[in-house]
Length: 239
Image (tube, rainbow, N blue to C red):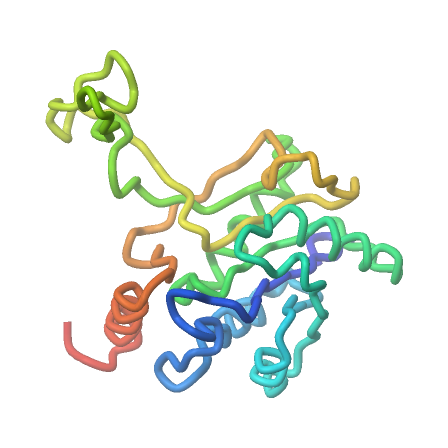
């Protein structure tokens, strides 16, 4: 709880994955990938309830040893083009009907195994701070590619993606740019979310995470990179 307000953590884990089959339960240093996220959520004192939302029996069985709740996700919300906001709308509606009174929801994707409990706590603390009025908070890291240096390639020519900017500026003269790293999304659910609203309602607060903890696994290369970084983080090998 935060004060008298309950917090629900939701871990979305659909079975379909084209880049890495059953990515969410693939073994990562002795535990399923999703296990790193479950363990991080369990270490956050403010979190009252942890739910894995999945459409897949194999994932449900894989998380059973962690002793957490599994909620079956409808098949139409487990497609490649399913939107996170639709998953949340469905889940929050079901929770409210069952009597859940939580004010805050934290959405933790299994593909960010290097996030720390502190990252989750900082997002919740910022969201709960009534002096800023944030409706949601997310984690960010420094942008991999500065937007000034992005280009469009058209049949007639190549163009700067953002018109009237100088892509040749040295790094030191570029304004700071950040990207969502996918590790933590926290939002208020006192007003039931609607399918038409953005995933992160405004105003949005931001917590900056270092790049070395901002891996969001999408393919085999990123899986290997996450494994290497975790080994270093946990002291499995010398720096």
